[in-house]
Amino acid sequence: MARIAYLVSSAKEIDLADGTRHPTGYFAEEALKPYERFVAAGHDVVVVTPDGVPPTADAYGLEHFFHYPEEDQDFFASVTRTFHHDPDDIRVTLHQTTELGLVAARRIVERLTQRGMTPSAAHGLVSRAARIAWIQDRQLVDVMVEEGLDGGLSRQEIQEAVDELDRAAHALAEERRRKLESFEGFAHPVALSSLSDEELAAFDAVFAPGGHGPMVDLADNADVCRLLRVLHDKRAPVAALCHGPALLLSAPEREDGQWLFDGYRMTCFTDEEEDQTVPGRLGMPWYLDTALKNAGAVFDDGPSAWASHVVVDRNLITGQNPASSEATADALLKALAA
Image (cartoon, rainbow, N blue to C red; front, side, top):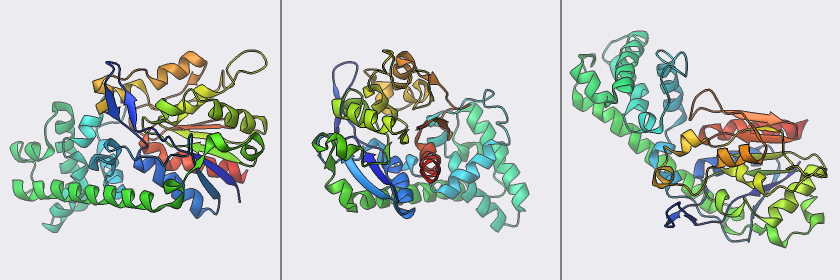
């Protein structure tokens, strides 16, 4: 059994570029999925915040479109693969994947098959409609009805599939919020500032989930610096997800005067993805992707935005975005097993 420092930001607000303050915190999915995976594997997961203040779930991260059920997301991926063979052909945007009703494809196909259409034919029909909706920036419901691709379904029936998905996503977001609030560690975290170097050395790894919070209190933090130095000295895994890699900016210099992670391959939430978020559109004070590159990172982002992407270089494990939550956690479990 390994002892994992589960380092979560306790920040509640972030200063935007124009000086206004915006609510922030951790992203629920990014905090919950790895935590549950580590506990299920039998590891001792110690929730730590910089100051011992309980962390706050970012309300933006609890928006329903970040919590579409896995089976709907997987089916949607099978649809986009039919017209998205090369990621450079059609860029992935948060708007297209969350605001056009496209992720309801599985539920629409179910309704078509109930009407007697074969699964293959139903998948092909919805895929053709989804491609038009994606390229022309139109609602999937409108495309299916207006382009004669409804397969015999009424507008109301197609819309009900979209509404059903939204209800399921809202329910899943609420379930994840309740789970996180029920965890003792999230209600009463350990203060990183209270731990001695000897106590830090008792950890076998650190994992930092994202949300914009880490940009506030993990990126320039003397105690995070101590933690990274101690763990790096023993070659313990350092894992971070999405905005969590902001903690790497607190890392000390090596003996040669270079940043501790200079020359390491890594990833994080990209500038492209950031510009599509609500805080990004309002104006971020700085960009994590750019900051890591400037610090000396060999940046390695995925072939398309919002897709799962994990980078492992020596003892450093980084995940790009919320979709990378489970894969990043699995990479840490693999490292601990090794």
